[in-house]
Image (cartoon, rainbow, N blue to C red; front, side, top):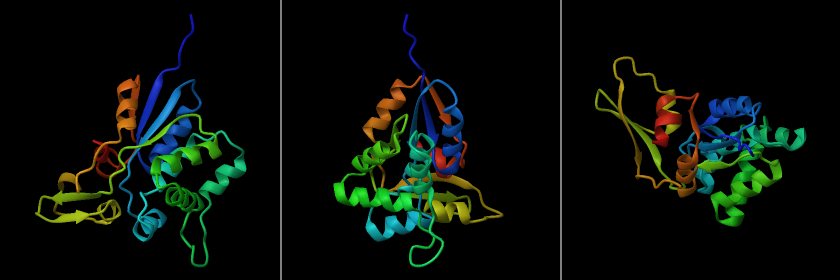
Length: 199
């Protein structure tokens, strides 16, 4: 009797998802990632603001984690410029953003990048909607943007609510992979900016 690999979906964003995917690759699994699309900092934030693309950083990290291509391709997609006008930018982020501009489709850009990196599993954005993550605090204040929420230190106020503005539509392919999953792995990652934002 043919035994199929368990379908595992890792949920989150950034480094935490990269680490989880990299570790789980050691096992015989049908491994997939559903990633947040709310990143607003660093290279990703600049590309999002300047080019109007969806944030590529969390997608890129998941693609690299699942890559079975030659080491040089993985190094290229993680290369960060440290001088000049491109300082702080990651090559992979620029590449995925350029593919989105060329094809007019974030999913097509991801599929093309996945082909180049020869990924062993699927990478699904949680949404294609252009939304901003917002956090409401117990003192009544509201902070907008994932990077700003992660950066702020409020000593006497706690987050009471997180929401997207405007509300986002879930990517149907991400919904289908959740429905088919044998196991769903949450995190590691920030509960508000990487995990609950997938809700």
